[in-house]
Amino acid sequence: MKYLIIIISTFLIIQSVSAQNEQELDLENVLVVAQQDDLSDRYTLEVALLELFNRYGINTKASLNVIKQGGAANILQADSTVQKLKSEGIDTYLLVSIRGYNKRFKPSEEINDFDEEIKAGHLYPLYRESASNVTFTFTFYRNLAPVHYELIRTGTVGSKDAVMKKLMKKVERKLRKDWIK
Image (cartoon, rainbow, N blue to C red):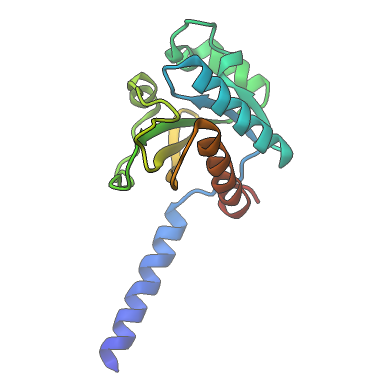
């Protein structure tokens, strides 16, 4: 009995400390950056996320409206771009990328800084015929510092549209539950 009380007390202390360290998202203004090489995949993913966030009253902007066609994504780090986005009320950057096509991926222990993540290559398309599922990473940054990282997996997929439909359902659930007030 004594050990049970010690174990429960330890668990509760650890939970309260970790809850204090995790910053709440409370999304209000977001720049959505889909990190796909294929422009049509980027467009599909960014537009779907913009529509979803707008339905919940979140001011959103797509990176496709900030980065010129064929331009490098690291323009998002430029002081002038950061200041322009801040003047528009954008305080959070959301980087979305595909991690892979199986369930083996585990959440990273360390969130990469914005500079490292924006320069990383992301070669996976939204849909691959042989894939049984798709794992997406959602990384949120404020003031170019990481504040939240999450993996979202979609189940069995049969087409690009099926991937997007399943992803939007899961993102909407996360949005309502964890990402807004």
